[in-house]
Length: 90
Image (cartoon, rainbow, N blue to C red; front, top):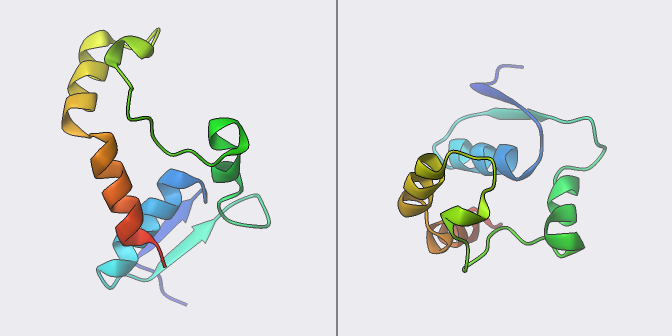
């Protein structure tokens, strides 16, 4: 079988990437060590499956470069993440 992309890992990032690729007509294969995709997503947020935090600040990222965290959070808002997840939902 032919695939346009192979994604290793069926966590939130892998599933989001696969969704975006498939919406653009690409054939995607996802490989993961777990039997069910998205198992790690269920662990996020203390088992609540939380994907984002509306009250996050760059100062919350201890050990990360403050400039990188500040720039990233200014480019990608929680609302953008939620909109992408809603559009990817089946």
